[in-house]
Length: 255
View (tube, rainbow, N blue to C red):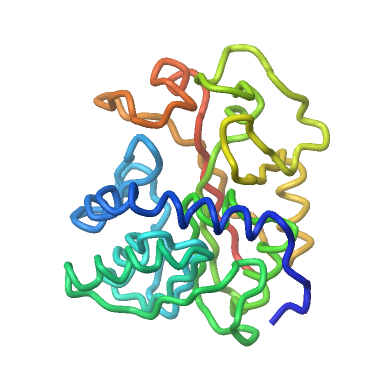
């Protein structure tokens, strides 16, 4: 377990998600009910994206599980997941949905930057818009490496570098013009959002993964399907997302 003291963004994000949790229960229920995993804001089917193509069951840790639907998917695929989240209110949502769908696995209240597990405990780590954007990558990625066994795989999904560079500080979707520098990108705070996000350039991300003991196996830039429609998420519109990837998924394996 890391001895690193907690930092301000962990509390800010926990408070924010505790407040937002009631609005995410219905979305979580829809995701739990899916016959096939669908990823990101445009709900791209796993059969098109292939994030789980090398998933071989075993012990799974979901980093920032929210309502727990990803762990639910992996449990149905034969995995043994543990969902970890910084928000007690989101974990309460996950427990309600476990009861509703009669599918149970451990849920742990913890920060992905300070995991309460011994070294080399898991075979697979995953995060979809959990630790992937709400935790400091210079803390959570080394922690994920620590708890993964050699040969273990990590998959994480979040906003693309392109959409972060093109997103305005206030309301409104990403533009066709750059709004901020790529040099030094790391901690991102928005004018209309109380939370703290983290985003790295591709070069910095690759360097960090390699320094943490990972080999990058794939970087998948996610585009909407032909039949995709506008989403409720205001940071990008469909026309923009058809030109540039609004989301990206990384697949890495621990050496």
